Figure (cartoon, rainbow, N blue to C red):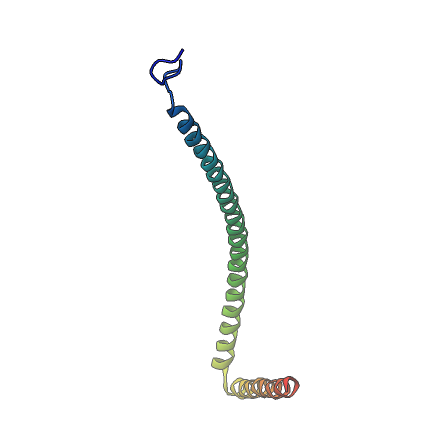
Length: 115
């Protein structure tokens, strides 16, 4: 029954507009839903990568701690050798000269190889 341009449900001509708006809202909602799911997957990927990097850094921290302990012990022994007497000082000078010579030799060899 038609009562002044309105149908039975009372919406009349606005029904077509409401259907179009509802379809547009549904389309936008689907687009938003896909964007949210993409962001969620990116966040989960970032979380996994962060956990992997933290594990890697913790391993490096342990390695650096062990290296620091090793170097600390070496420096203590080196100081002990320097303070023990004149003979050890001469030996240490020879050792340092040999090490510096090896580094200089390695430098010249590396520059010739890279040319």
